[in-house]
Image (spheres, rainbow, N blue to C red):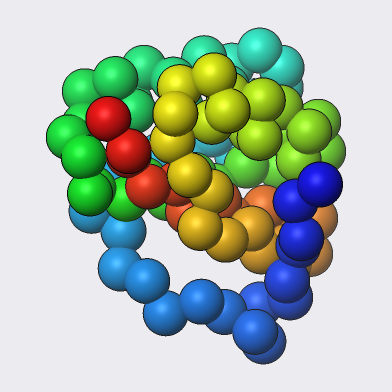
Length: 88
């Protein structure tokens, strides 16, 4: 289970890459995140912005398969912000 924090509890981690998939629905957010993560190196952090509610379930599945780590998940006004660290 992924813990979602509010934007007031924002985690102070600077992403190295950003992926905005606002307005797209499954499978686009996960497919684009997978593609972005595959082009990154260990230690880099991907920020994913999404508004598809299914991403709250799909991103943890993606990161578990890809050996990446979700550092934080924030929700504000129906939009989700994931910070994912590459762990290759």
